[in-house]
Amino acid sequence: MRVKFICESCGDIEFDGENYQCPICNVSLTKLGFIDGHKLMCMNGKERIQWLENKLGHPISEEMINRRREYYKKQDEEEQRRLEEEREAYERRARQSTRSLSGRINVPKCPVCGSTSLKKITLTTRAVKTAAFGTIGAIDDAGKTYKCENCGSKF
Ligand SMILES: [Zn+2]
Ligand SMILES: [Zn+2]
Image (cartoon, rainbow, N blue to C red; front, side, top):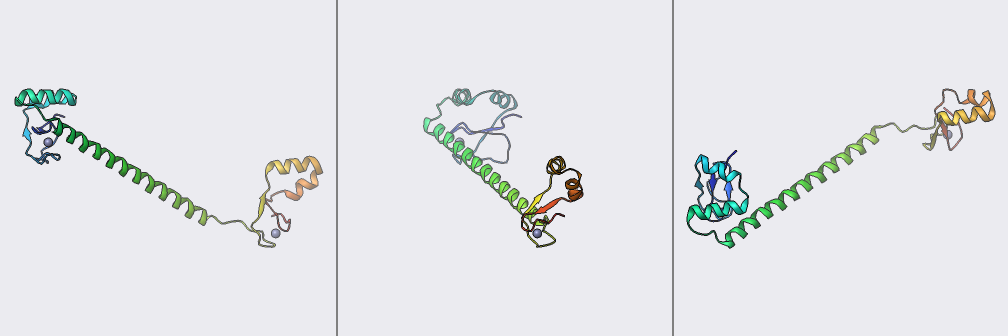
């Protein structure tokens, strides 16, 4: 990539020919030769201004340089804001899909009383029961996943 156009007023550079006007000063841009375009690519902002001042034979006004700086600062801020909005929209979507997902999941209910306050019988609970009450407790719970906190039935 090389710099193709330069604004003689503020030192702004453009990489494509779409924009024939400086977005900051609204003046026509100067087309650069291949070599100059390459040279400018390797320069930082300060070097570029110096190079341009030498080429033009007159200084670029501080005011225009500041205006250019402000312009890009604003562009940066707008970009930041746009990214922020995108992130928020993404998070909103993520939250919504989580909600609709949990809405789809069938909430298990007690077949006896219809209560949804159920306790999942974990393997640990079973193991503890087996140890405490012997095999009867273990058989009682075998194949059952939930215990109703309301009526105490297991299923
Ligand atoms: Zn300009
Ligand atoms: Zn129940």
